[in-house]
Length: 457
Image 1: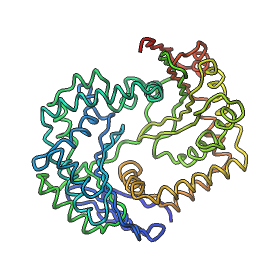
Image 2: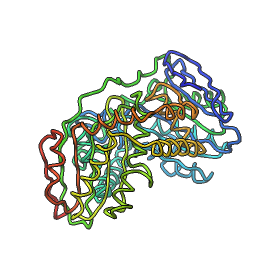
Image 3: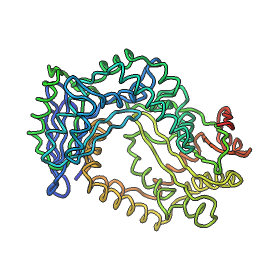
C-alpha cells in the first residue's frame, strides 16, 4: 500500500492497514485531530495527547518552560490532585507518562481496553485544566534542577548536548537543551510558564492518537465530551499548520571538550543530516544500519570486534522539520580517543565508496524485522500516528515503509555518505580528553574550537 497523504483540510480518512488494522483520522470542526488504529485481537490501548510545541518554540525568557509544563500537568487540576492522577492509573495496572522533545510534547497512557475511557478522561483533565499551583511550581523547580543535575552527571548526555549545540548552533532553537539549563530553570517565573501554557494548549493545537483496542467513533465522542467538560471551547477553528519544512542553515562544525576526571572519554562526532520529511530518509536508515546501528555494522566490527578499542560504539540519525543531524558515538579509554575518532570518520568516508550486496541485504533485513517487531506494541503504533500527523503529513504502513527501504540502492547510499562525509564536522568529547581532536574537527572547515574545563566536577 502506498503512503496515504493527510491533508489538514480533509475531515475524514480511513485506511485499511496491514494485518487487518483499521486506521481512521478525523479533523473536527474545532481543529482537533484524532487518529486511531484499531488492532485485531488487542486487549489494551495506548492513548497520546500531542501538543506541537517543543523546546525550539520557547522565547528567550521561557527556556525550559515546555519541559516545566510536562512536569506540572501531573501536579493537579480543578477536579483531581496529583495523588488522584497517580491512583487512577495505578489501581488499574496502567502506565502513564509524558515526554518533551524539540518539536512536540506528548502525554500518554497505556491501559486495558476497559479502562480507555478513564485514561482519556484523566489525560483530558490534565491537558486542559492544570492548576500550575505556585507551591507545586516551586517544588517542581527543585525536581527539575535535580533531573538536570542527574543528566549532567552522565557524560554521554553531556556529549550529546554539546554535539547538538555544535551542529545546530548553540544559539539556534534546535541547539538548545530540551530541559533548559539550571540558570533558565531558576530564572523562569510561574507566570511566564502559565503564558506558555495558555499560548500553545488549545483544541486547534491538539492531536490525539490511540492504538490498540479502540473504536474510533466512540473515542471521538469521549474526547469531545471530556474536553468540553473540563472547560475547553470547541468552537469552530482550523488545525494548526504543520511546521515549515524549508531547510535552515546549519552551523559550520567545531570542537567542544569537557575535561572531567573520568575513566573513559565519551566521544561524539556529527554532521548536518536530513530533515524529517526528506525523501532520502529511507536511504539514511539503510546507511545508518550499515555504518553503526547493529553488531554487524562497520563501526562495531572495526572498532570493537577487530581492535577492542571500545565497548560501546554506534551511529544514529535524527530529523526535524527543517534540519537534521547524523552522529557517531563511542566510549573509550583516553589514550584510545584519537584512534577511535579517526576510525569513525574513516568508516563514514569509506561508505562513500559503496556498500557490499551483503551489507545492504543485512541492513534492509534489520530494518524490516525491527519495524515489524516494533509494531507488535500499541505504544509504537500510537507514536507512529503522532509522527504521521504532526511531522510527516502522511501515513506509512509497514508495507509502504518496507517498499521504500527495499528501493534503496548502493548508489543512493554512496551519494548520501559522500554528502555527509564532506560536510562540516563537529566533535564533542567528555572526560580526560587528549590533545589532537581539533585536527579532525577542523579538517572539514570546522569553526572555532571551544574548550570547557571542568576538571573539578
